[in-house]
Image 1 (tube, one colour):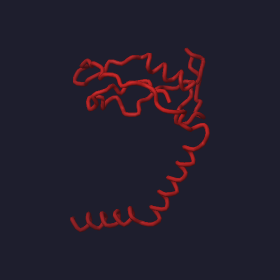
Image 2 (cartoon, helix red, strand yellow):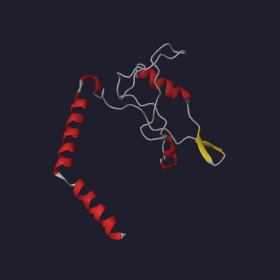
Image 3 (cartoon, helix red, strand yellow):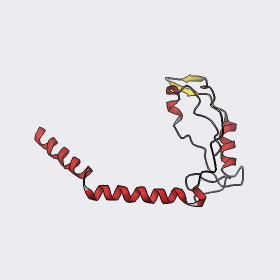
Length: 127
């Protein structure tokens, strides 16, 4: 039983350090660098914004639900010109309310980890 596990671990270890895998990772890293340097994906300056204090929460059954400001989300979407900031070519459907491309605002760090931070994760950062 242990010898089988060790055999597979050895194969996994050899695979992780194989030159083919390392070359593939390097290739992906270079492609990602090219992607970041394209003109439509450049960072538009320094991030502006100040840290906000950690929000309050309410308990719903056994979970903490952080009290959030919906204006922050809508400001983020407007600032992004109703385009996905990761890939601005995504245009799946038009919102029936805004009559613009439908997108959602997302957190860089998921709001479920808010307890681990002293400042709010729910901020509208402008580049």
